[in-house]
Length: 112
Length: 111
Image (tube, chains in turn orange, purple):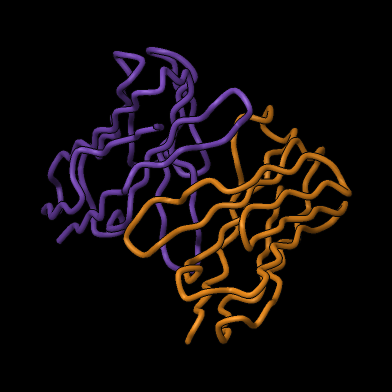
């Protein structure tokens, strides 16, 4: 069974204090790892897709990286508007590769 | 711009009622999904559809059914609502590269 574990569950940062969120996964045949941002009371918003170990993607203050066992979402000099829950999900060969398995998320709070 | 809409943001129903949640996407995506999201459990897949009138069970289909009569519309049906179906329900559609786009969610309370 595919498993996705995110850590920490919650993270509180000061504005400008860089940090990383972790997503570790156990899957049979990774076909993609996805990062989403979710604001309270809203649906998740797509951020990145990573396909193979060593791949990196960047968007503004966010950079996602991938190894064979985990992915990191690095947040550089965060601002209060980066506060949200960040979800990662994997697509794998299990079940025909027709679904995503989500982690439970890291709730990020960035304070002034 | 990608758009997925859901028929209600908030819904309150009584135990035993039949509940319809509707989702519409305007991106001509073939694949659509229904999830529920609960604290500590994350997003769990209820059903998905890969074409009109085609559907497949996800991880937690019990107590739910779906309907897809048109490509842009995917409905989730609770045949007889129960209190353990109180949750946030999220609809999504996906691109060919598997980016999923979500609607705003329906927070359903069953009393």
